[in-house]
Image (cartoon, rainbow, N blue to C red; front, side):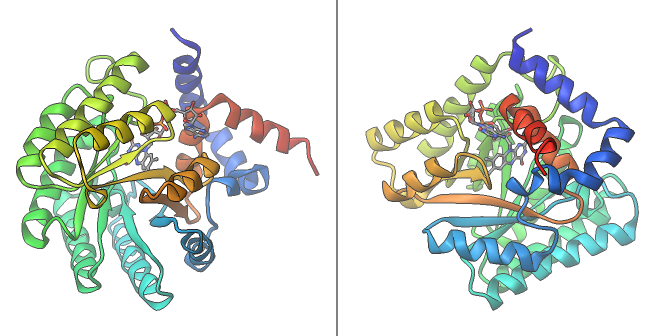
Length: 309
Ligand code: FDA
């Protein structure tokens, strides 16, 4: 097994340990989580967004949290997503909103989740804004697509879009199907620990599939967000859009807050649309663990900050 795969598996396994969870949740912000999280409150996040906007970067705001266990928590999560739209409007931020369906109660009751999702997309439409539904681990992919299709039909592609992962074998087919509905898609490689029965085990195949599905979606005239920090992917996208005369309104690059900030600004300078995914909130631990799992250097960074005052 390649080192990066082994690192990823190990970090995601250790991160699930209760003792580790408690320790990092208590001390993590001091240990360097704030490099990736804009703050624990929406107001702190709004300050960060304003600064990014001033540098020409677009933003998508995510109130971190996933897999809630009560109906009250699910409703509160939807209320908070709606509050993000209010704040975007109030401070005239150039931003939209990203959400996770397990945070809206998907694992408690899909209909409860749908009602919450419906309220959020309705608000997006009211403000002429947009909601991006993040994609989670493979057991919830189909139900996420099903609920997405319902809100897509009701509110339209200008107000709601979905994320799909190039590591899943099924994704090419999903892209073709959703392409027929004109869906706006964000393509990512995928951040969860998945078995070989559903996902490409080799990075090379995940990367190849990424380029392939981006090309399929762009060629069929649909909006595509290329969400990757991988320079090879970015270069290939630039080449593809140039060769196929794809207009700048049909695609944008997206990256995570705190990752490859220099490259983000470089793309803005080159005239590309670049959107930064800005997470905030108290439940930042699982999000943070996935960022460490993606890159050993991030783990070292956190270790170093352990020994700084
Ligand atoms: P890859 O992991 O191959 O890395 C390429 C290079 O990018 C690395 O060599 C390094 O230089 C840099 N890099 C990558 N990750 C880094 C990090 N954490 N810190 C520092 N440098 C890093 N996943 C998912 O399953 N569902 C979702 O909804 C989303 N949503 C999402 C939104 C946005 C805007 C982004 C950018 C990503 C996601 N993801 C996601 C995460 C995604 O699936 C994937 O895990 C990460 O983007 C890392 O993969 P890359 O494409 O960046 O390439």
